[in-house]
Length: 77
Image (cartoon, rainbow, N blue to C red; front, side, top):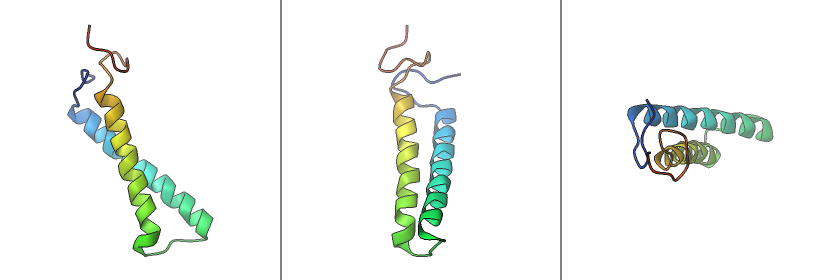
């Protein structure tokens, strides 16, 4: 069951969390390739954490403004 317009259900929240984790992992891989390895400093991890959080929020916002028929910014029929 898809959530209604201006509504978020638990499935959306779980999927948003998965999107956040996957995007953080991909950002970490990119940073590791770019810098030649992993570093254990906040300066290194900050963009990775922020990319994950922002991707999850973007996914939730997209679902919040989409109705159950996957129409953006349209009310339920």
